[in-house]
Length: 533
Ligand SMILES: Nc1ncnc2c1ncn2[C@@H]1O[C@H](COP(=O)(O)OP(=O)(O)OP(=O)(O)O)[C@@H](O)[C@H]1O
Image 1 (cartoon, protein in one colour):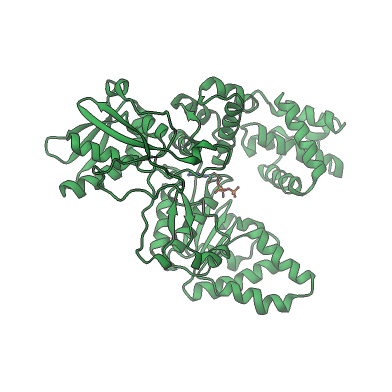
Image 2 (image 1 turned 90 degrees about the vertical axis):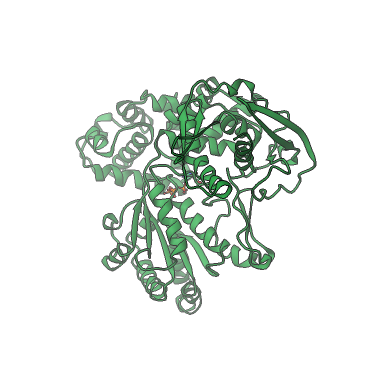
């Protein structure tokens, strides 16, 4: 058992930061097989570590058991608060470096090494109950210069899938490393190599979407999966998943010509050609190029709203691709039937493949995402309590969660603190907590906005259609959506009994304007700061 557990630890530790090993892997200990040998049980000291281990480590241990003992078992992680091993663990954090499995004990191919790796520096022996665990820590220059962006090694680095080096796309430290021969092709895809399946955290809210995305990779262009239509609110990982599909397909050599494009950029391309009198050129060249694609990934399709010419053009492209069995993946903030001002023939096509929703992540998943993102920053340690604290207070979406973590890290770095505690989070996220704790009310927003633009609060509730009043009302609605947890119907009610769609429209309008109107952006910034105190 000791030897086998050593193998498990080695396997789980590959390419993983020491802080992470110390925090997540070392606290686990083997219990053993149950009586009828259908389960291999592991003990974890608390529910968080139990969840994490069940989600990420159990499948790997299961396959290792299959490999080693040729035995199919379920791996079950149980809580045992008395895992006394925790006290005895002595994983060195003297260097904050990737851990390589000690030679001779290794049973699986080692993870690709970071480019600057030097010789092993420290060998550490840890004790779990009766089990001796050893890991060798190596020096890595990347850690010496933490200010450089470091891409997190995924918990388990993907292994190179092909022996044909010419056609191989290796994954190195979570970044797609595209061979020279394919670099131009890859660049033309506009894919982001950092958005992969390996660094996507999977939980209840996106497990179906992730599984379906992987099915698309397996069944490329197959009816029933084409198009894949992913929808959900902002910042939940739709774009990430879309890029992951593209990267995986490119890596596996299943597509040669792929393209990721935001719907608004597609529209801009088309309208620029029309404006410049180059429509014929567009149809003869650009449109032909699009039609050659093996894979089209189009983001935020709701931006096609009311853009009739773009919709027509896209319809022709869609038909050209799907009729040749080429894959299309679409993202949207809503499901196809709910899309506004989009041609019926497009909507019915969007509906004809696989439509999957991504939902906001639940607490455990938010914690897991934070832990995963914190791995990118080898020079800090995010404590379990701090991760829980952030996850409890930032619930809306992953983008905001990332923003919160960045704030906390910047705050800790500025004060030269390595360990991120709840106190640091409270201090760093003061603004955010005011919002989260409901200290900002709709009434407060209405009053502040009315004062700022020098109109009466009553005008905001009123039915007035005067342009300046409508604009101020929209700004107040936008801020109320951003800074409170009220739903759209609740906000409609708070703004003089209006329909939720009115608030939705106001939020969309101000969001769009804010991206282009610097003055409005500045005003909103001032208002946000005033309201957050
Ligand atoms: N499950 C996840 N695991 C890891 N990172 C995630 C996950 N979900 C989202 N993210 C990260 O959160 C950020 C926002 O995600 P993304 O841009 O994919 O959201 P989106 O749903 O496309 O939002 P929008 O509709 O606003 O475009 C990205 O940095 C992404 O990598």
